[in-house]
Each structure stands twice: as structure tokens, then as C-alpha cells.
Amino acid sequence: MAGLPEITMAGTLTADPEMRFTPAGAGVCSFTLAANDRRFDKESGEWRDAGATFLRCTVWRRQAENVADCRKGDRLLVTGELRQSEWDDKNTGEKRYGFDVQVREAALSMLFHPAKSARPDRTTGGGGADAWAFPAPHPGGSADAPPF
Image (cartoon, rainbow, N blue to C red; front, side, top):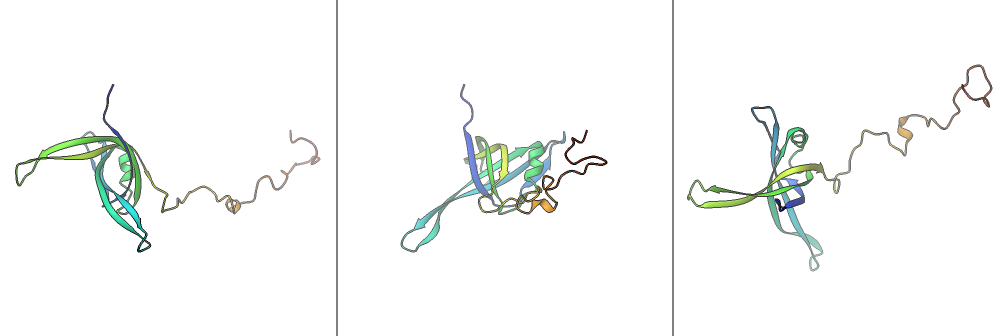
């Protein structure tokens, strides 16, 4: 059975996401991602932008509220269904067509922005002593005897 085309895209938010709620209380967040095509120019030795693709994206419910915390310039990874929409141009009356993504899953990219985890840092021991570094105290018994 054929379905809508799937797309996975990495791109930069062109503006802060727009969050709203349906009358039933479901969150919906809309945003635009820009994916830049960069090429290395051997003559100048620099990277140059070779164009960009802009896609409007919509995400629903709890994920919408999470995406709404992102800001312009953040790099996101999204996967979802690519849909075509059509409308009449208000000025000319001509039919216009565009594409948007109904996002199934979104995540912050860590390509240029390393994650800051709330987990303890493994290299410093997480601020506390290593539980395996010292034997457990044994009240009233030999250190060689089991604690039970």
C-alpha cells in the first residue's frame, strides 16, 4: 500500500517556533527549517553556500511543546511525512503549491552543539566518591564476614 513520502531532514530554525493549541487542548507547533548546501571552493579554500531548501514543519501534542522551547538558529533533525499543499495566491488568484512536513519525531542536532547532560560526568566521578573504591562498613563484625 502506497503512502505519503517519508523525509528525514537536518536543518536550522529560521525563526522561533510558533506554538498554539487546538480548542481541544492539543498542542501544535509550526516552524521552518533551512537546509543549506555547502560546497568547498578549491580556488579560494573556503566553504560557500550553494543554495538552500526551506521546508515548513508541523509537530503535534507533547513533542510540539518540546520543540517550542527551541530557538532561531538551533539545528534540528526531523522525520515525518512530506505533504503537498495548494492555495490561491491572494494577489493574483493563481494556484500555488508548496510542501510541508508533518513531523513524527524531532531532535536537536549535536553536530555543532554538544549536548549538556544532567548525568554525572564520568571523568570526574560525578562529584562524589566511587562507591566501589571503599569497602562497606560492617557494624560489629569482621570485614571478611558477609553483611547478613
